Length: 324
Image (cartoon, helix red, strand yellow):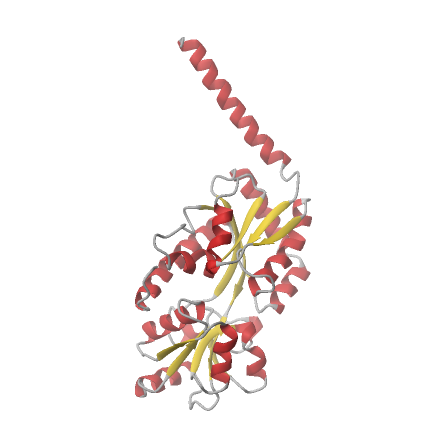
């Protein structure tokens, strides 16, 4: 091919590519946006996603509809989003369960939370609460640690199942604080909490919404919460980190898009998400789910995912869990 013709064709191709990208960004969105939720309808993540989606559509100028793709701990929905066309019309509601824990328990790892997606931004954090049965003679995090050390063969920890958030958050606490308890896994968060209420198990760390009513009526005692700071939602309940420096293991939710989504579109989505999180109805709706608004730049969300992923790898190893 003549050099001049080759150069002309290359330049023309580049021009078309730039023009297409510019059009995609300037016209975006021109139709409804799908938000894939890799959790079951009615779950906490699903409810929070719908709260955000309802107002995100207004910020974008197009409707945002939720599509549930649950199964395999969230792997099915996340992989569907990962393989979607990177045009800004598919978003994935990411959480630590589906985006971090589930893939790390599979062999080979099906996706990387950081490398395989375009991060849009976080929108919620759900603190976990360290609870004990009221008959256990402890009233603080330190007292639980001391009691468990003195009664190592007698104290047990309840969880929602092997590899669940409550399991890993408990393992992290035991690892960092230097004590041990027998792990008693259950089939779900409800049975796990009920076992502590009934005195069948002694303690657990579980999402705040699942335990607040039991704490208020005295059927559970709260010792601390998992955020590294005080929480307005949880009042005077101290961070576990006050006793175990560096402890930080809470639930979170955010939005990612398929890798390769044009940066201009990612920027538009992030701006719309930030605007959405300023709406009082959204803040109130998330609070009713036991969540606080958790926001920052897309780059901050990317760094957060990388850190959470690295921490979870260590906790899974400490729990002696083998990917399957």
